[in-house]
Image 1: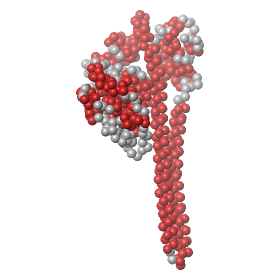
Image 2: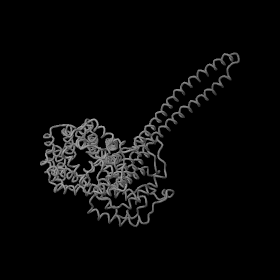
Image 3: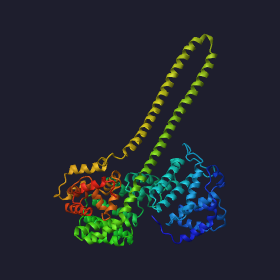
Image 4: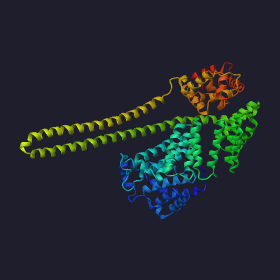
Length: 627
């Protein structure tokens, strides 16, 4: 999440020198006086030119900014432009792959622009854009950009939840201040980037459903204004990955193929990523392993970048491991472990290497990799606590968005009814008035005849008006009922998210026990026969989270008490908490019965207990004094 910073440090010294005095004197204005602090003539022409250049050539824009900050014009910047400049600094650092170093000044800019935007209410529809300030209709866009780049700063400092909150804040600003038809050009590109960032975050936390929602929204805006020549293909590829993870093979293939079709050329990393991922999908659907390995080696031959080669090696090594070609797998996995800098890749390689050396009986090597995994297991578990928080943030965002949409639709329905009733009443009054005048002028001898005709005419008019009003009111009532149904669906969604009353009532526990009951797993039958019953990594994570919810962060306490337990050992412990047999665990984890039996013995030895693991673990889980 960090970006390196070297030459840019010189630039920042100049920036901080020229703006330190301004920012030290500038406090965030109160809402009632913020209007007086803004630039009366709008943003600086020089800053506007740099801003415009940034969207096309961020490197050139950075050079322009360097020249500007040492110019006399920079000394004369007012409060508005001073904060505007800080936002541009952060954006240009990010777009040129440098670390954000003006955090304090950026936070002041965010507060300042928030105070300006808060002075005007969001639009109520019908105008395309609600001008936040008479002379600066793009203030809401600038404020949203400030929140976005503030989220980047939090993300670079590993504050995932705060980063997510900032991205959602900038979406709320854009969607509340601009009609959909106004979100085009730079605004559409900005929306695509924001939804894309959220999609990446949810993907990293294995939250497929919100990731798909965000990537689809990003794709919608990217088609209006592409973020790059590869933007649409990358989003289609990311959508394919989410459906691939969810085992929706047809949808995954559809998005992968469309991603390839939309590529402008094939000599790039995006083509290699898509091609390699399709090869992995083919393996998962039963395509011959030799063909899959051949495709993956072809991808390796297309790149000269060593880091990318190591990433491809990880895929090949994992497939060979699953196929029990341990010697071949060991070559790729050890290369990754020794040369790869990415910790997550090293962890994945170490997990499989630990299992390989355990199978081969080399306990010294296995212990080396287990020790490495023990270092990072706790950090990985702590990161998972952020998953529920950012998921809850996104659900709240969707709920608020639905509520605002429902409120807007109700207001539109009321306006339609009023728009129908008022003109109709005016017409009736005018008609009666005109008719009364005409009747007064009619001749005396035709009075009775005209009187009867007038009564009949009034009755007919009344019936027609009543019929028209009745039809319109029925349509309005139907719209209101539909809105109520939408609100009820939201309430049902909230109800479904309530935590189960007991561990055994957890959905993941029900799923596992159903597979066990249906499978009737036998220890003497090859575990491959039970492939359809296997648990994926997301399901194992769900089980671990369920255990921690119901037994007071039991896996964390267990790891602290027995640090020699690996991340994989903790998954086995969670399964044994359900009272499963070794045969059940072997089928669910897709391991041989002997491997699971040995793992059982290893864990009992660590605990120093001769009792069956389910009994031992349940006793520790319910013991509140245990660590």
